[in-house]
Amino acid sequence: MADTNIQFNKIIELCREIFVTKMKDYGTAWRVLRTSSLTDQIFIKAQRIRSIETKEEMKVDEGSRSEFIGIVNYALMALIQLELGYSQEIDKQEATVLDYYNKYANEALELMKRKNHDYDEAWRSMRISSYTDLILMKLYRTKQIEDNSGKTLISEGIDANYFDMINYAVFALIKLEFG
Image: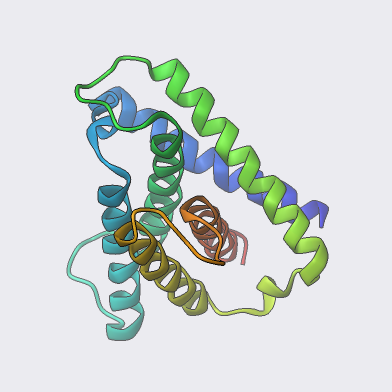
């Protein structure tokens, strides 16, 4: 499991680096997005991955790797928005945003460790296409919960679905990066 923790952290470092670089280009413009808009952004990325997997062809010169990175980052943004709420205007609190990013990335790691313990790293035997399908399923669940004003009767909430999306995308990236 130590390798998984190291690999997970390396993937998060890669995602964080891209997040920080984009924040230098765009600032925190994404803070105006409601969580439902972030859910839709993740959906677009997951749908594109599925399209690439099924068509085995792409006409945009970015593969599934960049889309999985996008899923990690958008899901972390969504968790931040769940806590802070969306902003009516662009705020300049990049350091604070990065603190939240790190907080939720660490929570995703801790969740992965607990689940990995119970499931004995079963994810390593799965296909990347299964992660794509599971992320899409989590997105449909999240959209349904959002349509129900965030209320569930028995199920986990929106945040749990975002954490699962992060972990599935990280697993896919581990397989893509480390084989």
